[in-house]
Image (cartoon, rainbow, N blue to C red; front, side, top):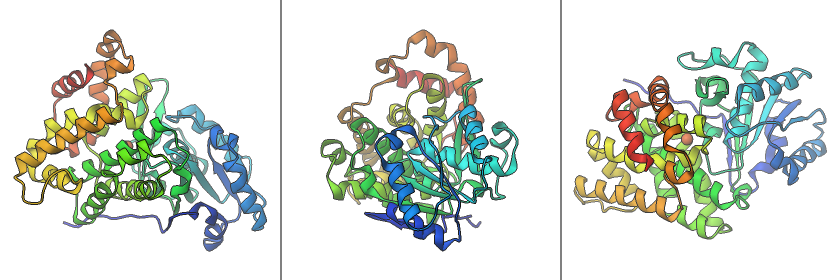
Length: 387
Ligand SMILES: [Fe+2]
């Protein structure tokens, strides 16, 4: 059986890559960009710098939409589409963390094809291209710069809608770790664990393939030894560089395999309780890994080796035990709370437990897990992670 591999057509990776937007647009003959970003990046002057760079390269028709929101909502995307359609843009530049990048992708598709966001959620597959997207991530990271996915929240039903297809895969990605040097501690930890989760889930996924495996293992090797370093030493450049590269490689890995049960269960927690995406993954990762490990013991053991917590010739069972120890220790070291400690009340949790399990299953992600749980088992896992 063959694997379908899709990648951005161009990636610039390394210090200063984000300064190459004008030449990247020129390489593809693009002249009228819409920049999709957020208010924070406007307030610190990063967006102005991007626009000034373009201006000095003779690209003058740039417009900026900065009203994206964390966990982008349907309303925020509709506002972006209306703004995009006020002018004749020929591309969308997503600039920011996962939320601006995911917003840029959705705006790029809806501004060309119209319709409602819900029409585009799985099982729909949107391969026909909208406006081309150039992604400039500022976190390490969701990997969105290299994936064929976007996730938009339906705020009327509290559902995170997964949208897939080649239309969401950026044409180009400018991956510049220098943009992450000023990331706050919590964001650094949460997005870093998200990346690690992408790599692990891609590697144990039923849809893993030799190409995604290579990317996933490299990502784990880059991320695992550096997560605590960037937490303690935010301006450690080699560690930031490794995390950024690892995040992009992990994005490539899961875009060409899949994520699995952690992400399937994490999205409803984010949608109902507004827990940042990486943090809700982290809350679930040790529990879900312990549940899933018997379904792919060797694969999880290889994750432990790639992460540097088990030896090459260690038995699988022992390596997986070390992996679980490490995931729990990471959560402790990075101050990841349980849902209860995060402040989610027992009553509120119980009230949506059925819906969370339903939404997790409906996303399709649990179907790629080494062990596929029933709704009852998913609820039990939620409760195990809760306390
Ligand atoms: Fe993720």
